[in-house]
Image (cartoon, rainbow, N blue to C red; front, top):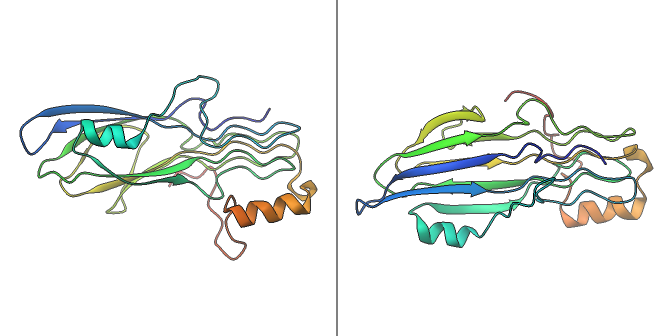
Length: 194
């Protein structure tokens, strides 16, 4: 099996005080893409090798003032191959309060993607970026300002086997399902330090 994007896992802790003066602290457990194997595509947004679940964003919204603007598969994040790596996900979190929220990022795969096997390509790297465009290191403590948002992009898994050996019907299904970026789109950088 190729490398998985979630090994090691990326975790995010948010803590602060809501507008009514109540303290809160939430840990975001979300998953990346698994690596592909000789016979199967990698599973998307699946914890591996652990079994930690991500829980629902609705429950996080009930327990804190944070709002989850989007939580979706990250197209093109799985490494190409005869068997495609599983997709990571994009999660955008908004702070609607009048106070800053502390944000602790603890993760890897920022510069070192999940590697492919037997000619498979690496998955996309992870990153976090504020709505101002500022990129945050994945091992950092920072503030999410009042009214600000952060996009956390979880990495994809590595592919298995040469991408040109992928069956045409699977290539078409990937494109139709939105698992890969459109051919006209600019490719996402892999392994950079954006």
